[in-house]
Length: 195
Image (cartoon, rainbow, N blue to C red):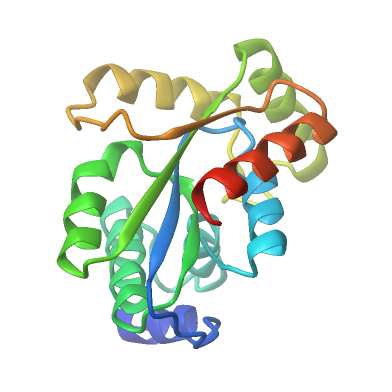
C-alpha cells in the first residue's frame, strides 16, 4: 500500500464539521499519563474529533506491506494536522506533543488557529501500574500501538534530550486521582478555556 492510500484511509475517518474559529487541544504527557481518558471526556463534552496518534500506528500494523518507521508515522500525523486545519475542523490530538511542540506551534500559527495545551501530571507509581495493567489486558504483541513500561522509560530518556521550548500557558490536569475527580478537572478546563 502506498503512503497516499494510507493517508486517504486516515482522513476518510474525519467528519467535515467546519468551525469559524478553529482550535486544537494538545497534550504534554507521556505513556500512561491518561491522555486517552481525558481525550474521550473532552470529545464527548465538546463534540470534537479525536486525532489519535495510536490510530496512525495501527494503520501501519494493519498494512503489513508498509513498514512502520518513525518518520512515516510523524509525516502522517503532521499531514493529518494540516488537513484538519485547512478544513477548519476543531480537534483533540490524542498523543504526546512534547517532542514536536515547536513544529505544532508553527503549524497552528500558520493557519491562525488556536493551540490549547494541557499538561497531565501523574505519579510514576500510578503510570507504571497503568502500563502494567494495559500490558496484561492487551499484550504488546497483539496491539503494537499500546505503550508499555519500556516505552515509558524510553520517553523519560527522550525527555532529557528534548530541545523544544514549551510555553507556560498550558492547563494542568492531575490524573493521579479518581475518575470523578479527573472529570471535575476536565469540566473546570472547559469552563475556563472553552466558554
